Length: 110
Image 1: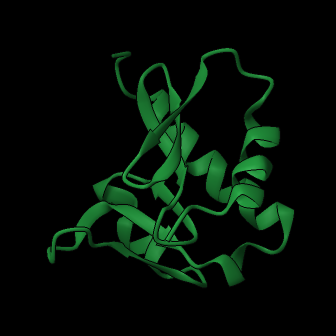
Image 2: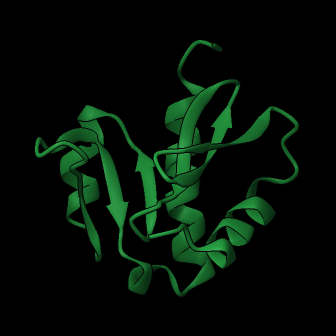
């Protein structure tokens, strides 16, 4: 499945003011990186992939439409996929983007 281009555009609009954000095709989707670290991605499997970090995983999973990323048969703590149905509201999407951005901002540049 190809990534949702409309979702990617919504993410792009949310992050467009930051010149340190770049885009890169990864994992069949379109990733948005902050200084080389992935923050979020319009997932090739559908929905939004968000990097929240291991410590924020449980809280993220308690939110509607969230599940662990599982690319290899092993769920990955710290990485969340949010179902497209949970992202219809721009404020909800923005909160997820901001969470991924905040985690990436705390990492050293690549």
